[in-house]
Length: 148
Image: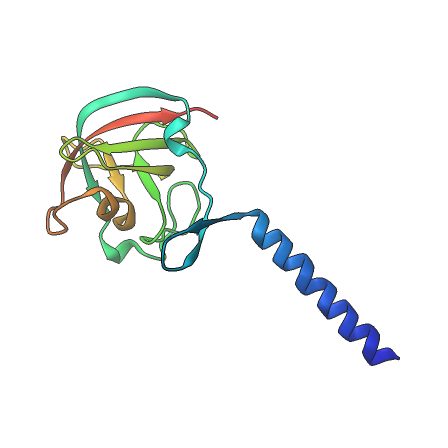
């Protein structure tokens, strides 16, 4: 009797998990097979305010991984974060590459860059997501503040 209850609870948990899983995804049917595609938030529909246009962005070197940022967070080059001299910590910004129109959403969690002529330091992941040339270390970008 006890093992039947355990099997029943396991089945119930599985069904619950699957129903939640289905609620966060939608099915897309193609001619050959059915794929499950995760829903994404409409980031492009978020209200933004222009902050600065045609400024230079750079990215963090890997040597900063694991170090504390000015906000106290541990830096991770694989996350979508950035450093800015004046924007408050926690501010979400949209950074758009002027050359190709690709953009990324990042959260300010550090201070910098401290090199003259640079406006924002992106994590390596964020930088690589919007660049066409992974060997380049600088981009011309537009920065917009995402309003919540």
